[in-house]
Length: 598
Image (cartoon, rainbow, N blue to C red; front, side, top):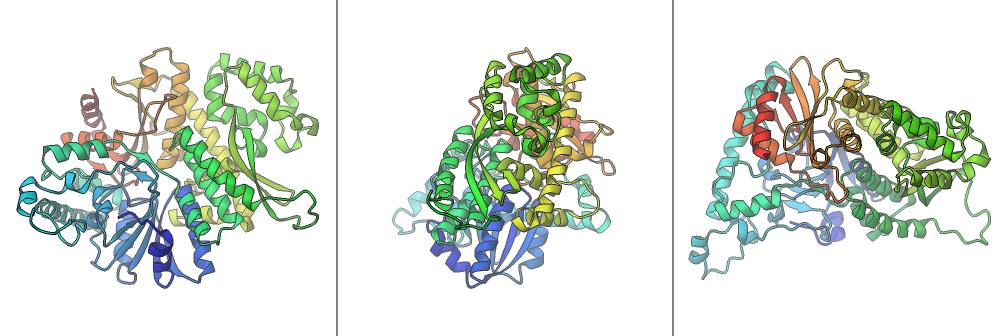
């Protein structure tokens, strides 16, 4: 059920309890976690933090801790699947779910006892009515005289729901057997050998639902998209509790910017949420002109900026930033000789000497930096780049350290998805979490260096894919596969990195192709995950159009294609449009996907 009063129904409930936090491995979830940690520290709430990168980790962690905790908080995971089916908790276990993934699973919505959804009701959720999904016409007649309102499906199940429960129990037993047989002898990836799907997609086996109900559910669940940032939801809770601080506000800003950087929300949604945060920024960072020496020089200051759409340019050279930002690289077509010439013409039009452009931004002449934004915007307009500046925020730590919100997103993401072998996924998660604190600026600067490598590798891989014609049309979608041995391929085996590469590749392809039909197609991209186990990561990206609503239909399509061909697929990631697939099943899986979408 949806929680209407976050303060009474959530915070005051967990305030006196010991709680377990399950946090997904994305920047928005990290920011929401930091805000919640700060609130818990204020009120001395005992909690345990467990990072989870996928459903298998979530199941394992829950089984380990379920005896010790009654209250569980899930951040950016759990809303879009039937949680009770997956975790099989005790009846007194309570889950508080703060998740941006949409659509929200209907079982979670209509469970009034164990599932509490910390989700903004003003998001366009469009949840079907309870009667449209679960009630049977015959049962409606039988119970027409009864006073039952059917509002608590966990307590009073209809016949339809009982059939669903039986099916999900059988699925659960099968998954447990598969997981046991896989874990005794080999790692998780090898369990793909034994199963066509260890994790089923939402509502996939519910054949008990009759045709009209199935149609309603299909219409509701066919597209995957994202709602309001979890960090923003947690900041609003802090504001309601009158415990909001500048640090919490900054984490909310970074959480929103993460959604924008990864193209998870529309431009309209981003601008709307920026407006909300801008009012909080004015409230927290207001200074009267006649005030003097009221703040120490190393204080934190957040300001609204109408800044350049260039990645890390204040911590890089302007030339490197122009070459490795997706927006400018795609518009200039920098993978071609002609594109490199256009970049030189662009710099000449601004009147910036190459010596200045190629040195660190901090070392550029002050006279050039003063009007740099206006100069770049003016020249960008001549070259067809109308959106060179964007609404964003920056933070100052004293006079020395200044970061844009997008800088922090890139740095934190790179730390979390670091390919370095010197630590586990949990170590990388903790390092990324620590980098968000102003007391750990050295970790943030390390993240910025990793982000530069990642951005360079992204643009080099895009150039390689386009120059060697690796992006091919399969009919209803475009397809690109990174081969084992491709330079920097291991940087893109993680889901967030591969998704970002896919989105940037699609933007560049749309700018380079002359085929009008191909400009409107979505993209499916595959990258090697484990050579030892012969698995690949596959992601699906919606079409790149100005009017795109960022809704992704590949989650259900992947599920159906794997089901029809018995492809060995693992739906382990919280984004349903990201899967793991056996490499030898790839061709039949793609053939099924083509016929399904044609």
